[in-house]
Length: 406
Image 1 (cartoon, rainbow, N blue to C red):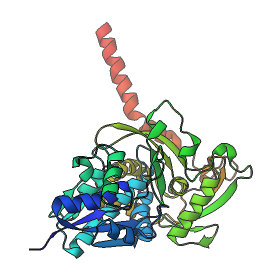
Image 2: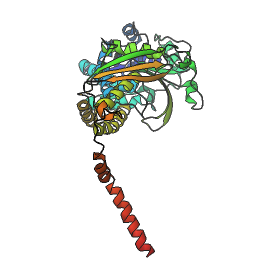
Image 3: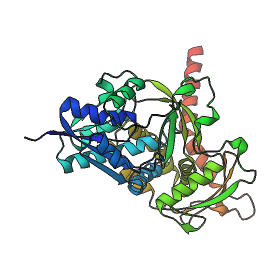
Image 4: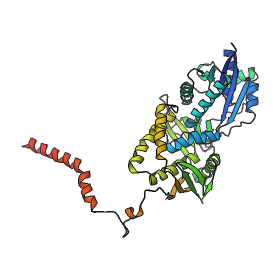
């Protein structure tokens, strides 16, 4: 029987670099690193060489941005999934894809286990581990940060120096930053105090609304079956479209969020997010749904949106309920084709125009001019029937009160 093989979710930072050596020693194992490029700005060049120098026998780095957007982000967008009504979940949406990537590499390499660098009180441990358990229950899952002897970053640095592990030790940022093409999550430092406003240096890609352009900007977003496909009439590939909206929105102060949220493990955390493209696309998508969907479907989908967001946040992407709810969502998007024109100005989004061949809006029915085609007389009977249950309730109540008085 050969050596134990462990596939490590590898970023190249201090934790995962130390993990490679630590796992190698503790388990006498061959380490294979797996790095998915979801659009993070952190340096990915040379990561394979660094992993090998750190002690890995093999390093796999894959550009997954297109798959991330088309197979994961667009699903959440179509669902209108915003956690606790606000957060577009850039990190949460990326985790099931990375968990699947880990499993795929583990199966290809004949590995016994996978390992991640998540902490014991974060959300990501849940997303990785539930995903792996669901996709490949036979794999062992190792979480060194929950078990190892290091109590601080400084102890990890000492370990890295002792074993000549190539880590770039620089002045530590007061913030913990996690990002991909769909958004950035910022926490720690002064942000842990919910009474303190986020310092300007916490933000990475957005201009303060106070300093944004006085001119603003107008953009038309085109959708086909719920998926954004063009900006200002120009068809764009998913990566290009999102990158352009991040740039445009960020320059106009769009996409900043400061939230107190409920983590999976039961604690509340304070997070600051930047997601210009996500905020813009969710706004445009929702406006198109208001134009096209019938009333009962739109109302019911609001409940589904909330449930889908909770499932994604809680790490339950690969579950029967998620699959079933997405079947409903996809059915609602068949006619979700049209254009939404938006104006961005100093952190605000204003809707200028909504149009679609599937629009259920009728100006002849809505107007109060002479062009009105609505049958007002029909409302008399409708009012009597619509209010009948409540009229009856009051009549019964009044009758009983009269008997009590008598």
